[in-house]
Length: 67
Image 1 (tube, rainbow, N blue to C red):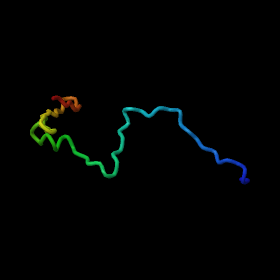
Image 2 (cartoon, rainbow, N blue to C red; image 1 turned 60 degrees about the horizontal axis):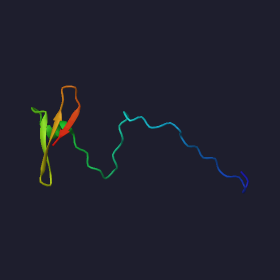
Image 3 (cartoon, rainbow, N blue to C red; image 1 turned 90 degrees about the horizontal axis):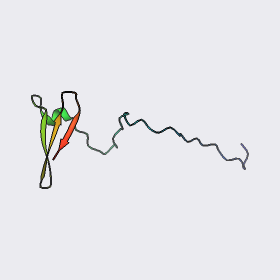
Image 4 (cartoon, helix red, strand yellow; image 1 turned 45 degrees about the vertical axis):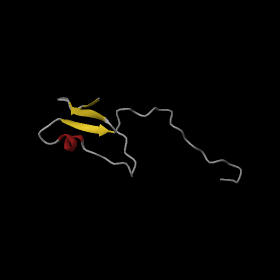
């Protein structure tokens, strides 16, 4: 490559698949929802400031967070 040539770069025009799980940042805490809800249960209470939320695992294995 001569001094005047610019190295080639490639950019993807394909949008990321929203179903693909994203990896957390190395310093981000990771919590297992089944551990949070307990072995015998499918719900957990989560408190943020003065508000309480309910985390629920559905029969289909989805998470629902409600106020």
